[in-house]
Length: 401
Image (tube, rainbow, N blue to C red):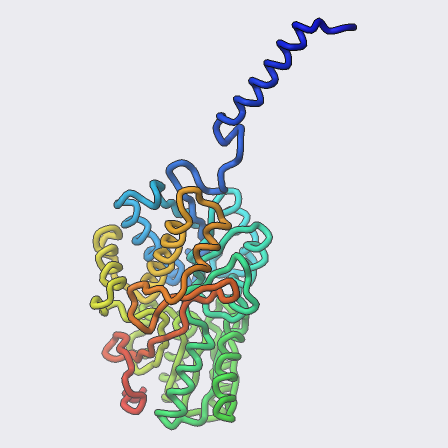
């Protein structure tokens, strides 16, 4: 059947008009917007320990992040968009990581942030990489998140190697301590810190005199405690969150045993003090952010103001300050990425941060690059004195445990 030339011209014109009109349709019909980004919002997702024995850590991270996001949103948001935070609970349980991540993907988040823990954290690495979702800011200093560099993973805090190096150098060079043991949680977190201790002691041609373990998410610490006590160490590095660390301190002191106890920032200092301040007295804890009474530092001052104004005057903590700092770095990168926001632009903005002053003093300048996704490398050493964490100026002057 032949087509009349006039009809053919009309049909051609209609198709041309239809194709042209597609250029002006909404993103739902034309090019898809970036995941988690709308005309007026940016959705950030978090899988976190919101329940269980380590919930203080997860809840504090979220408090800090929400304080910063609320402050930014009250000022108009970022490049005209408000920040939304979608939180999910993984219970500090590696077995729940995949399901938690899937729930974030279903929620259509732009990026992920404010995660807690090493055993869970290592599970999220391949999930973030395969889904091309940036993951920025985890409450863990495990080397597995840092080396090798993962394109979509950015950890802001100093590492456990940084923390244990400060501890071992202080004990060895200043306090004159030689016999050091490690009692650690038997998982990726515990072994990460143990490796840091071993590396730091190797510089002094030494090694731990004894090792003991306890299982993840339990308070069954007696056997590991007996194993390290048998070696009669002068100092013991305890590796766990606040609940099992508190159990160890109570049992050791009840038995009349008082070596120098140390731990890393993951313990959750205020969580430990809340349930056992008396037994924590004299314990050395390395921190990856400054003490929150340092309001002479611009970001600490801003953090305290944001807590008071936006979080019902919630009490400060080292953990929520870290969440606040992570939110600030993420937000700065989103702002630098511009209004035409994509995940690739966010990653490029993060990698362009070199020796950035983030308001935490000259020792905590943030640096990322395409070959380095760990932002900070300095720590503060504190000791529990009078029920609060006080910066250690001289290891020789530490109070006796």
